[in-house]
Image 1 (tube, rainbow, N blue to C red):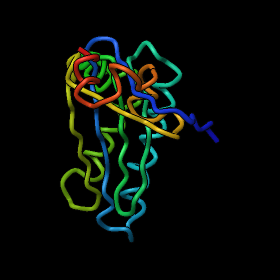
Image 2: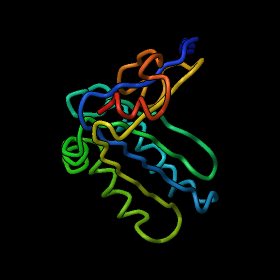
Image 3: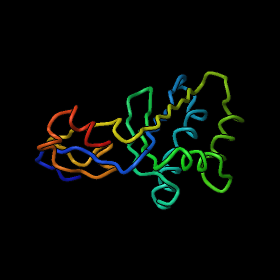
Length: 159
């Protein structure tokens, strides 16, 4: 278990970064041969990305809530994210092609993603009595005191 940090903290990120939300929805739970391969693909990708930090993934966390699975990812840049998505030698493109062959738009499994490009000064965060989490796990945790005590000041501080 990750250690709890008993202090009020906020996250700092150097420059621009990307928040990428990606998920799947099990629409027909009685068809595990359709959704099982989709669910198994993401852990393989996350393992590959964690083993190869130069690909640009800063942090990822998976959230389960039947029938949905959500992965929140933080990337160094959109260019890193796009390069990974299109690279034939990495796990994503073959998984995407397999999904399109097996499921495509038949309704068995839903997939989705949202991409957010974040500029300096356009984010803030606070954590209290938490292990490193979210942006705090992707970036650098600092004490939320002084100029970082309030949300408006943290926004200015991150600029």
